Length: 183
Image (tube, rainbow, N blue to C red; front, side, top):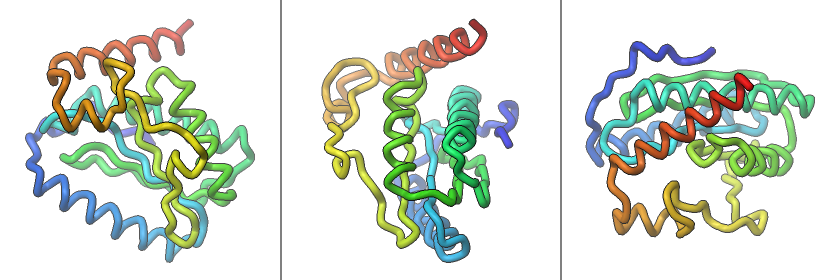
């Protein structure tokens, strides 16, 4: 169920709105865990800047959603329930997957590292008991910056790169992914 591209809001969101969105996401995650009792993948897009819901972020999201569904199919995992939310704070997805959380997290790390758009996907995996598995749980280093090889959180905190530079890189990654898909 991909998100429609033409209905992106292009709304400027504030820091308080982003924080409120994270709180709402955590509430949704807990509700889904209680309802479904299986591994949960919470999927968002890395979208620098104050505008999070654009045609670009929705296209990147739709690619990620297809890849997650394909990964589940190849792995023989049942997706018990899935939803996509077209929020002003950026597209979000939840997938309740009947599979071991450790296996799902390892597979999503592989997807983030191998797919041309993987660096733009934030694939959080929660155990059925609500524990968020992190890259460090698997001796994986923090994610690299979109532009340089430094730790992404350092570049973000220091605002090392301009929004224009980051958005240009996002568009180039999307073009590369779409060209590879058509080759």
